[in-house]
Image (cartoon, rainbow, N blue to C red; front, side, top):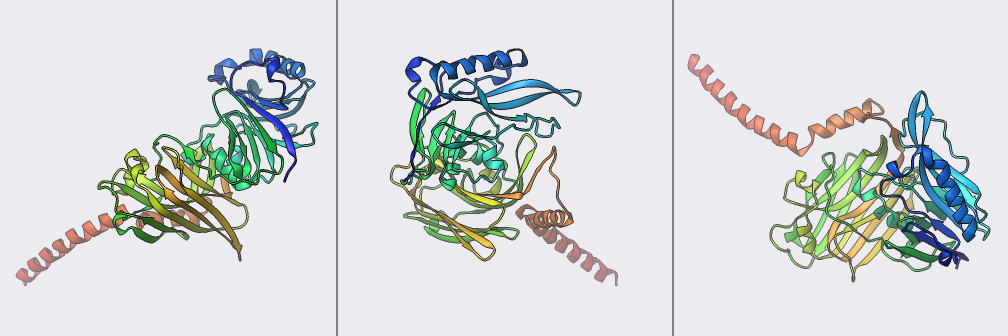
Length: 425
């Protein structure tokens, strides 16, 4: 059992009064229009105001601000996380350009801060949870990030990350206590007590969200035959394979479609950041074709899955795996398991869900940090990668269907030509 961190507060409304001083850490919210509300002309004044609030109320305050700076004869927007101690002094600054390709020299002065109650916190921005293989147990996250991958978008990824790492995560949208899950969430004042070594209880990282559109054109997706009621299928993308076991108590209503998906490669995460990805997922689809799985269908969420089991092997170094459970509604009676077994040069990960419904995405999202890069366009590291992409394209369902069509037409042409040659002899 870990010692108490004391009280952490996430303040989601603008303002601070003396009545809220029975806390240790306060994370200020991001303004709705941060690009307009925090500019160069009032950056210093904003820092002074926050410093005064921290000093008057004797609390730590974490705030995310933006400022404009001249960099390489250009004006760049710099994102900054600032930590103020109980005396109002800035004790930690974490800065990075909004454009990750910018060559500004704005490295962080310090990415951790030590409190007077004996706990060291890492200071992060939301994308760091995806881009960095973190090993600490207590983090504060401030800032904003637009993910192009729905499963990794904040704040829904916060739950999964905290569960996998069993770390405390304090953000401006909620407080997450390791495997115990979310301990505070809302649109007002959120207060929670945390243990610095995490909680003993376990809560599945379910996250509710609305149906979304996602580019799955590079994924290998096979249809799930709901009529079978007990399906075991392996879906591979190159050498990476996902093993699915899906059980239902009945065939389900007509017109419901699901796909079993596998992907290994590089995806664009946002703002020029490309990340190595290995993913297995069960997805709702609009129809029976692969292209229809790009848009999650809310109509498919009515079916109840007795059991869903997904297993895949990942490399043991420079990688991380997270359970993804995106829903349209809560799962009151579901049971969940997420296991990892280390073997010879492999890490076998299994995610299971019992009595599952309302599913938009269920699976494993794996990160391969060795393939990450920053750039404006998708590139391939070597000829082997390019060769693999060509091989993948040639073996795609669309190309194979086209080849079958051409072969049928060609056979007719050969037959006609043969008759014509025989008649000429």
